[in-house]
Length: 320
Image (cartoon, rainbow, N blue to C red; front, side):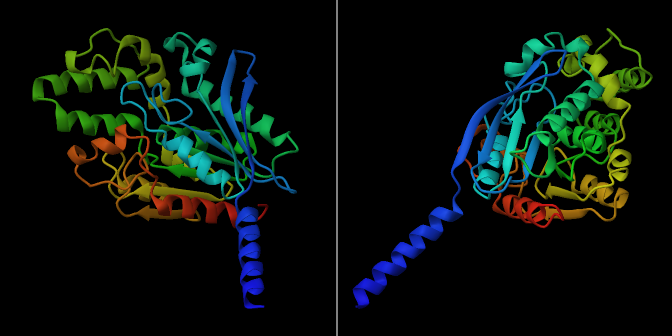
């Protein structure tokens, strides 16, 4: 009798475990914007009711849908985030921005990229997902610069919520001025500051100090001009929907003070500060010299609390 009871309990536990881990449909998904096709990846848990769907927006530069950048290597942090969410019955779409990876043909010349174009793409993706009966409420998740794009797009996109991961609370020109002051000698700093002044005034320049030629190359300056016109805290303050701010305390690229600025701008937003988490959303030492592995190793897990906080926030949304 006892052996039969044990066998029944084991069978019951197995069934519960299987029910808790959904079957996930993984498919490519495309968006024809009328100005080029953007390519992405869909993860859709198979269940009776339409799950919430997250649109994941990558950070700056040529960062692809998985969070990888040719300059820094493969990290797969955004891919890992999508897989984590799928295991919690939350669908996701992550995509290559125009001009990046598989979506490079949509805008092959980076001189044609602007923040406004990226925002329009998020709105178009959002309308596509909201019109699809397979999905429930839409949540925008933006990482780093993607947090700004999410904030700018959210209301027009009809998003039910916004989540920022390592998003700046200051205009990018202010951030760059601070970084230049820390890294350049006085003579080069003066030239770099003058360049930022011109870009903020909407003027391109061929006079770029040698150490800054990659970051401020002439072909990327039109994008920087559009970026410098944005105020992340002001954009975040305008959000009418629930919002979650997630920031790692060991992030050497975006400071905790940036997350606090976003919280001040929108006091009803939730703020989560994660001990030990860095810009790659992984637990890592505070010292940048010791964070190298987290920027290069795709096998490292994401910070556990990151997934817990995002899932809890989405599950407690009024319409989720």
